[in-house]
Length: 127
Image 1: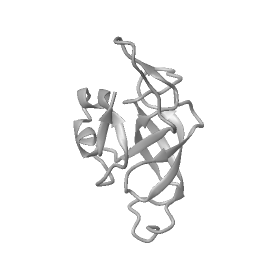
Image 2 (image 1 turned 120 degrees about the vertical axis):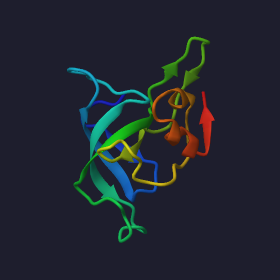
Image 3 (image 1 turned 180 degrees about the vertical axis):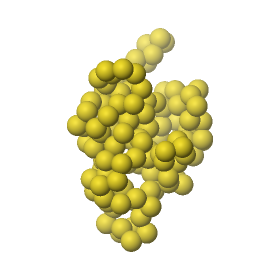
């Protein structure tokens, strides 16, 4: 569950390290965002080694796709999916990826959404 004001990790190579959620895009008065939802984020911290080559700058506003949440997701077959952190991937205004690589595993539920390219760029899937 991602709420307004939640700090999230960025797991692509766009140059950002942490972002802050300030708006949940889908729905009217929607309170929480889950895996696969879009949010608006503000960049708070950049990666130290790649600061000069970063594709983003501190304070910019981007769209983020929620990839991982600490809150468990239950499925109909009884499985629960829990990650250690809240993570996003940064998108531009046309919903295209800013980075070219995604670090770590993503949920298999992204494979059946309109963001299939993000699922295929990751290193693996988990239920």
